[in-house]
Every structure is written in structure tokens, then in C-alpha cells.
Image (cartoon, rainbow, N blue to C red; front, side, top):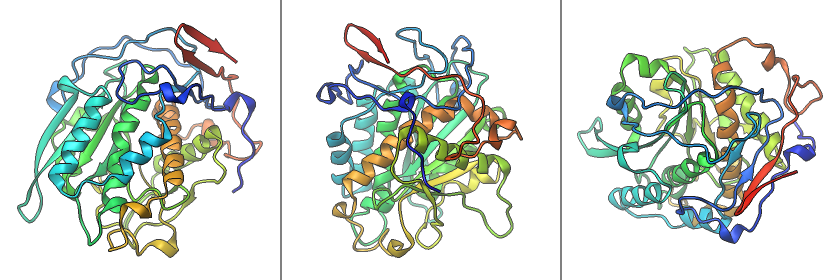
Length: 369
């Protein structure tokens, strides 16, 4: 499917990128991503979530009022994004230290950052690192974004282990562009056991609140790809198909030059954190960038930092920012057979929309186009 040119209202506006610092508490530059199919929604007062599952003790405060059909996210400079993925820590302990520091710099601290002990099936101990960005309404849903960080394989593990993990703190910072309806939980998982350990730690009500789970792995080999993993015993649920459709809409919003492609990761995916979520009928999607002709690279001796294309990696990062911002507004529709989903991305068959307002903030005020 070919993408048409994005509307003027969907242009990405980036001002003074040198002023964007990932670790500063109030970024002076942000990207406005206006999703053409988001409807206006009302915001409910924020309140803490159940601390038994990840301790959320404060909610984000809107710095200023913006129309509900405008989507904001913060963006990091390309140099920062590429540096994070191309500097690959050699050990699990060093990776965890780096991720902990990156999340701290992205303003994840206090009870919003949690570490969880994990023991894999062979008895090897490890740690999950979990960062939570609370939604405005504790009764709203939860969107889980996960990656595994441990070093496996013969190479540096830059693709199969590190590329997804390095992106999570950057995405945590990105969603802070405005208050979110849903709670976002970012899980740096220790092996395949990490995601399941975290999921089992939730109470039944918190598990029911999970609206979507996104797994990031093996990024930066080329165009963004996706797949909903399932065995021959499973049927892909409607909600998972809607999750895929929203990715295609996000690609249009982001103005990417090539549509994300559906490509199975089965030949190289050794760790699948989506499995325990699919067992609960949570819609899941694996985001990767491995074309069929390169499925021998992840986990091999060729899996080194130089194998990650910085430009492709940054494009996936930017698309994921747009995806999470847009997904926040439509997550509650994923499981519904809503007329909203009859529109086809990339065609003229679009839903009724509210014309989005593209805004960006500069020091000293808000400018609108």
C-alpha cells in the first residue's frame, strides 16, 4: 500500500532542535502530531493508581490548555537517539544501569520507577525495570510498551536485545508532551520470563485495564515492520487487527515515505514478550525492522552496533512517538466493531474528522498554524 502525501495539517514542525535536551524537565521544543481520525474527548481529573502494581503517586499536570483533538509529543534530537542505540553496554548489569539512568533523565523517578526481581526458567536471577506514566483517569486503560534488554547471542546484541530497550526511555519522554487519557507502562523485561513475571504481579482488575501491548525488538535494519504473533491454535483477534490499522494511520500522520510492512519475525524472534498478554486476549503487536533476507542477523555474530542504520532507527522512533500519541486517544475502541475502523488507511475512505490544529510550543508562548 502506497502512502499519499500527508495533509498540511499533519506536517511535523520542529523548531530549534539544538534546544531539545532529553533530560531537561521542561523541553523547549516539541513535535505536534495531528492524527486525522481522532475525535475530541473530555479529560477526567487525575488521581493515583493502585500502588500494588507499580506505585503511581502523582499525575501529569497540563502546562496549558489545548484542544482535545491536538496531539503533542516531545522529540529528542537525532544525534541523541543514534547515540543511545550505537553505544551498546556489554553486560546485563551495564545495560540495566544505562536504562535506569536514561529513565531518570526522562523524569521517571520516585514511585513511578520500580525494579522487580525475576528468575528465568534456568534459575538465573535478573531484574525488570518498570517506568509508569499515569493517565488522567485511574479508571481508564493501560498501554504497555515492552522490550527485553539482556545480552544474548554471539554478537553485541545491538539489534535483537538492545535496539528496542534503548528506545523505551526516549518514548517515555515523548509521551509527556501532554496529559494522557491512558496510563503508559514501559517494561524493560529480563528475558521472556520478565514480561510474564510483571503481568502475574498485577491484580485481576489491573490486568483487565490493559488495552494494548507493544513489543519493540530488532530495530534499525530498514523500514518499520510489524506482526501480531500467534500459533496455529490461535485466531488473530479483531482488536489486534485494529492495533495494526492504527499503526498505518500513524504512519500517514507522521508522513513516512514507506508504509510499515507486515513481516513475520518467527525465524529470528527467540523471545516473545507478547505471549502471556495474548493468553489474556490483550491485543498485541511486535514492532521490528527485519526483512526476510536479513532474518539471519539478529542474535548472530553480525548483530553489532554498526548493523543498526541510524536513519532507519530514528524514523522508527519518530513513528513510535506518533503511534503512542494517537493510540492513547483510540485505545478504548480497539476491541469494538466500530464504524471508525471501516475507514482504510491510505485511501479516500476516511472517517468523519475534526480538523486538527497543529501547534508547537516555544519559550514565551504557543504558536499556531
